[in-house]
Length: 259
Length: 322
Image (cartoon, rainbow over all chains, first blue to last red; front, side):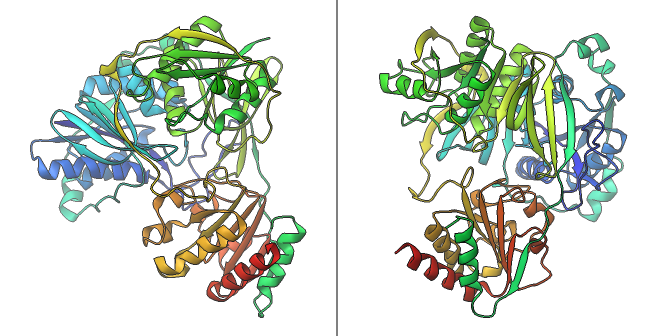
């Protein structure tokens, strides 16, 4: 079983994250770049399968600038076997359509039985790249899973729905995405950190994925027209509870027609 | 007038999803709204009438044997067939679980850009523009695409309704390649049939934090929510501690809400939590710690003990409505 885990490097949500108001793109200098936590949960699913099935291979794949290697090494230190880094200057600011094209080519080259991704990133919140990959690669997607069972032949689990959940399955090869219902990931141990440095990471450019500039520029593109920073919220009334605070609050709510 | 396609999601109990109203309202702003539905059996007359009453001038019903068994793929085939026939100016879907996967797969079929999680849509100089609220509402970003845009709309973001229409039906048959789709085995209905509003799109939300100390104590949050007719939310800390289900988590991870009223009880207001609620119209916070960051965004803050104040609130609100 060859499992590829998709990893995105994002600004830490515990820091103040900024957009460049001139082009609407992420200000990569604001916020510490880290592995998006949902991807660590995805990796944990793969590593648990590997714990039980020693022959399984876990590959982490990330598309991002040069420094995304940091996130790949982190995943390797947690227990992944090897990495693939898709990096190319013409991918800067890539939208989902282009991102999915590049990653789908990389997945075809890397080969996979199962691809595990997070349901959505904390910086884009689109949650659409895995479904685009499924369409491009012609393999089933089980998205937004709350739990999973992986066998040699198929993947099954409970998918979040808008009214309850749905039990779903798909034959391999397939793509699945995890939600926060999955467990937190393990921490890298000392041995993992030491061996991560020696694990192989392949770097691939768009040309190496067989994509030329003409094909890339022929895609429809999403364009940011304007980016405006919303004025910060100002604090309002703050009172100490002297025994009447509840009554004062209900008055406030009533005045504002909220009760 | 330009055709605007809307994916109308139908629940397995045969109801039109709540998202359809807002999507059709936006579509009628941009052009001629057409509801696209994937279905196994021909749609019942009352369902077609319902879509018409929400503004659909046409209902494109794509019948598929696999409409109840294949995951999202029937909706993608329905939309792809409708796009090929009707040559729309835009396709609108809900930013729901099914909606965004259908949007993504359709985008690859048609080679279109996707504008995600829009809170508003407009036409300007002949271009269709979607507005999004990014990084927990810290930024408002307007975007467009070079071709036909596929737009997912945040659930609950649109209040308006389209003028009612009398929907004409277009019927088509589509086939799904089952080998390329996830398959549905069975459904698990939401465990409790709750009279409480859904968190996503709720007009009022009452959220509790780790300050409640136990699942039993957390019931107080639910009681206040019920007194106000509000949805129940929770901080990540409260969810991790097992006080409230993960589906109630409000924040950067979890659900982002934009209600008229958000009451944060015993929630300190870490940056990740604020990212999921700071666009609420009115924010109320109750916390023991006068320095809690939640007070920086609260319109009305009380420094005090939730165990004292919340029961008083419940009583006062109940006596008002009695």
